[in-house]
Amino acid sequence: MSEDKGLLIVLSGPSGAGKDTVLKQLINKNENLKLSISATTRQPRSGEVHGKDYYFISENEFMDMVSKDNMLEYAKYCNNYYGTPVMQVNEMLASGKDVILEIEVEGGAQIRNKCPESVSIFVLPPSLEVLSSRLHGRGLDSSEVIEQRLVVAKNEIKSADKYDYVVINDSLDKCVEDILCIISAEKMKVKRMKKIIDEVLSNE
Ligand code: 5GP
Image (tube, rainbow, N blue to C red; front, side):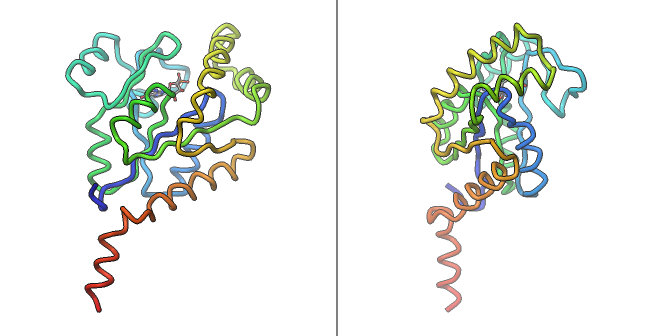
């Protein structure tokens, strides 16, 4: 692993756990942190912008990218495909940026296998009740879709113990602070500091 390379961070958690708000704050507070923009076959929600929120592509285009090995990971979630275009992630990591992937648990498992040097963080809602009221409160999806998402959420939470860290999103500020601490600590691991140790010794 090159120490100048950025850190790859996986952030997962059920829909409604507040990942989007957490992410916005993380990016605002840490300028070395960049968000990977995923590709999806889901229809854009009102206000979502192609190339900013997602790359909204057809299933044919998605499968073409998969077959050409252009996805670092991908999964089907609630009848739509979601995947991480590999090129943008590699470019950002090579330039020393830390890259965060906001992905569901199947994709998280693929990244842990493929990129063992990555760090994975699971954002847990304080309870399923809170999760349900957040999903209804944001008014983005129909009741039917919300019920489907709650079933998926329970299954996702069962995968939380496969992650390196679990952070509870009860207080937004605390959750953001916790994740920033994890990133700092990961970056100070000895395997990432060897070059600096050598530099200090060579300046005797
Ligand atoms: P939403 O439709 O609410 O934007 O996202 C649904 C789920 O897809 C969320 O859990 C989100 O984390 C996940 N997701 C978004 N992008 C990706 C991706 O590139 N890969 C995978 N595996 N999951 C993704």
